[in-house]
Length: 368
Image (cartoon, rainbow, N blue to C red; front, top):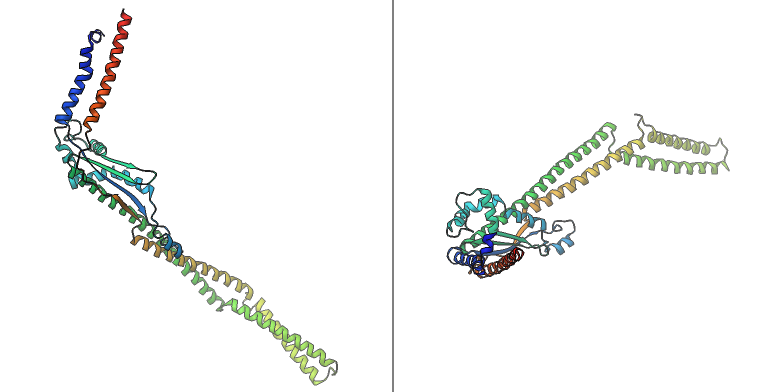
């Protein structure tokens, strides 16, 4: 406390203003290394989902629409800051060697032998990735001690990003295709089973089509009923002027009996049958089998169409990296901002000087 009170304004200015500004000026003049920034702007776009749909007109109208894939762009942002990408870039461009080469700058250089976690943190501080929620654009700003290296590192990040987007896009397409092929296999098995059941039913009951058989029997019964009605009317008409023992009456009665007998046979065939199975029941069971086979066939057709669509999707790029602005080659160093930093330091030093003067004056006033 006494040492603080012993400081006069001149010494206080020297300690809080002159010394920090002098040290900062020496650092920015002699030690601080220029850092160049290469900037690029990209986004991830996905193909229109209606391009392979079932409505050709809509597909033609929307085929050119390529909406931004916001989630995929966020995934890409995380990938750019990942350790896996850093390891690839280090093998390709010797990123660690470049940032370790600037030995004069003690604040922004990368020191030899640091761990991969520290190296990753240093890399994340030198590669800035910002996402614009409104436009869905991803801005990548890469710092380097040399402008050529900054551009090369940015270009390598773009190349790896393109590979990353294509990789998970194709992987998704392959998974969809595998699922569709599995469904197609199951649909084919169900269709084959339904057809086998139809064939077994036809073989067991020795009927090609019970529905047609039932319709034919119904039509024959209706025809016999009409003939019977005509014969009964003709018989009643003949009985008005002929005796019952006449040849014509006997002939008409014989025809009517034959028709009734045949009608009873047809009715018996339709309702009981020799095997105990009713024709109408067989027709109902056969219709159920036919409907089941039809559903299985429709499911097989849909599965086949799904496989074809999945194959088409797998053969084209579902998602793509769109480069709005390619990596730039910087001409002037953006960092360090020497004048801005010195002015900021001067303002802070003046504030500290004023606070220190106020504290000293307050203490002296209370001592008096």
